[in-house]
Image (cartoon, rainbow, N blue to C red; front, side, top):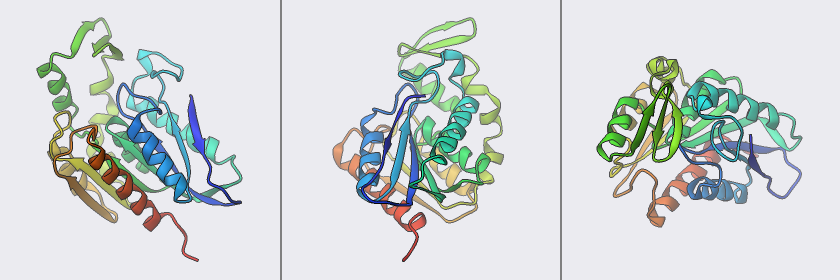
Length: 242
């Protein structure tokens, strides 16, 4: 996996956040980069990396599975545990879209390590996402064992694998503090997904709906709101009081 590690000035140990991109994207995504840079300025170590099956990381379309991404997260955690400046008891996760769903369920599966999470535009109903691509005629090809979505090859198993089938159990088993962020003009992931996730969470939680924001927060004002809300959340739940 390819990625970038942001380390603030000082000796540490520092609270640490893993930041994850969405479907078809990578760790150079502008929103992911902005979140990471802002957290670094706020005194956090940040790791942003690209999931398997997405360039510039390795793997192929068969690796574009949430179950593989959860394994990628564990590899990222194992890497962070080798960094002396990382506060191993103050690790959080943030993600956008598919990366947000991965961050959420990883907060359950890897609960030994993850202390807080921020979910931005997470899907909950993969069928509705598939329908949105169909409406926009962005499914270019359906082959034997794969789909081509806007030029991105993905395994046909992606949207119906067991992680999605177990979503209610996986999200319902999250007890760390979670912030849910969603735009009310999101045409890729329905806003009802945010409410479904919020309802299932069992720990401290907040739901922030950003009026006028689309799925990718293309408006800079909306993007800054996401960046600031994310930093505020992790300052509240990952920073140890003096």
